[in-house]
Image (tube, rainbow, N blue to C red; front, side, top):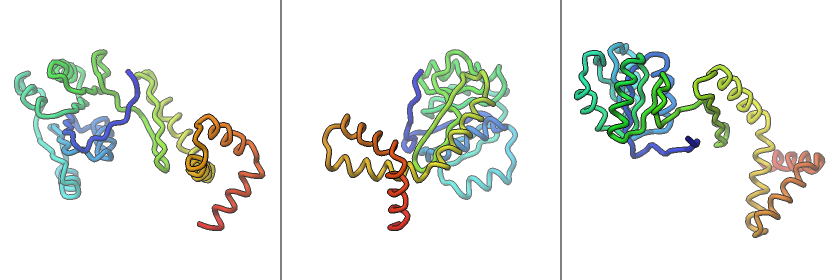
Length: 206
């Protein structure tokens, strides 16, 4: 597997299960603004349904017990979607993974079956800078702590990021060689006096 970023605006997403894991997956995917996101679960609080369905046109909740669905029932559901997220018990996750793979769907499972083809890792987004980390299910806590460290670092270096972005734009317009631009940037940001003066200038003319 390799990490990729996907725009979900034209894709339909299905989530089986709305416990703690299902909710975390749901909130991450909701931020990607999929064309439609449907949750199948037997335990859904009516207040939560109302909250999401009233505020998001692309969200749909369907109350059902997956245990009562046959494999053909699951197939009929799964074939309507592009991305499948299974966040229930291991037995049903395996059923859903097996059917999804046969239908050539992207499938993620909370119990990390070997043949899944979609991972939704821990990530952070600070000023359009994305960082993601994945431990293959070995230590979600470590992934969470690494994400927090990087997120704090980015938040504490927002001026540096803004400065580099502004200078990169200037260099792109004036220097054609990418290697030369990189060399200049590295030299500039090793110069503490220049960086300080530049950031003061940015503050002055904001």
